[in-house]
Image 1 (tube, rainbow, N blue to C red):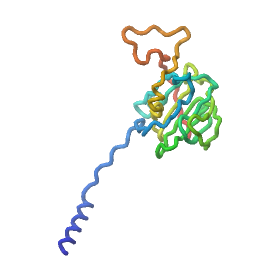
Image 2: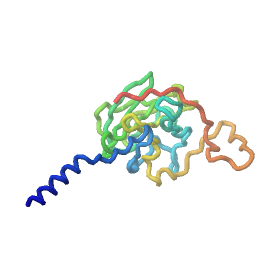
Image 3: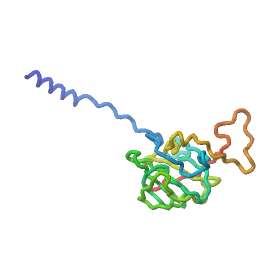
Image 4: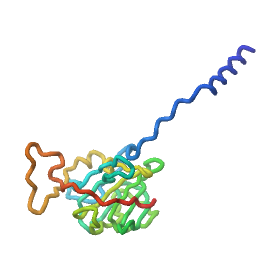
Length: 215
């Protein structure tokens, strides 16, 4: 009896004396994973069997305030409908620095939820409205300096960490043929040797600083 009591006391003392294993370090901004593709549509339409041309891809900044492109730009004409890519709730619908912005918190994407942003967009729904995938949330406004031509800037965040919105799309949507976006006088002359992967897209350009919308 005394031996059992002694062993129990010794085990309790060892449990409190041994250090706990260190917690894993937090993921750096922009690297939080998207657990699964939840989008069932692109935010703007294209011809049947194609997806909108990506005129500028996601370029994660090296630092929180570094240069980069915190989203993707999709070619689209002013006035076209902009649609929710997945079910969720409108968390913001208004103007930021003169641009119309709509944000949608996506259902079933964790806590805090993933949040998509669309700009420049004139909202057709109010904050708090529930939306289904493919439902119109606004219409694309005229360009306001972000793109050389009309485009939709599509962003994705979890809290304050920027993510690549294309990761929301399942392979069947990402692998559709893109709409071709060529200059008015035809395609430019290719460089010597094999053409790079980005050849045929609009020329890369730096975006104006982007202000994240309020939550």
